Image (spheres, helix red, strand yellow):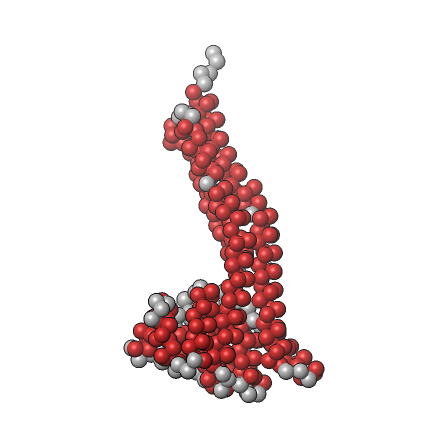
Length: 298
């Protein structure tokens, strides 16, 4: 089994991939050969299927053509190759992968929805310092003269802009940390289960999955499940699929918890950077303009 290249794309729509994989499973179960099944899927205006067929027509092997789409399609290519290597029913394998991708996509969507409100609020608040600056213009104060004609006013504006940049960088970092990690939770366990269902030994199954280049992780968890299977004398494939489902559930829960914590963490750049920037860009030039226009007493 050949080692895989890194995916060309970091992510693709897992929901779209799940729908395409489900259709492929139906076509294969109906008796279509793999390339013909992909051509039928391409005829439905599926963009990924058209791209795969175009590569195949240029002489690219089918698995390489699938893998080149990146993201969830790398997992599909890994499952496809493992199934054909060990002789597992390909249509049934694709149905399992479709369910896995759909479940993972639903979990990722839940996290994105939970993140949408705090992320939108954070981005809106980042414009607050500039709103204060525009307020001075709207009220008719000579803030332009203060900014360019007063050393203290210019210093306030420069420091305020630096704080805005710092707030944007800080907020973007917090948002990145809260987003779901790339990859499909539990995919490694699913692939090992596929290899075992085709009759491969445990060592052979682990070797095939290690060479597949899938985005899933959790090798230690897979080995723990296999040890439990040996100790309890129960089929490893079912335990692995249950473990994969638990991994996806855990990813959904952890994602929601990160989204809940994000609302609190975003208060730090707001208090440390955004509010001081509002005072420096909006309030300070306004006060300096008032002071400059007020006649000094004799």
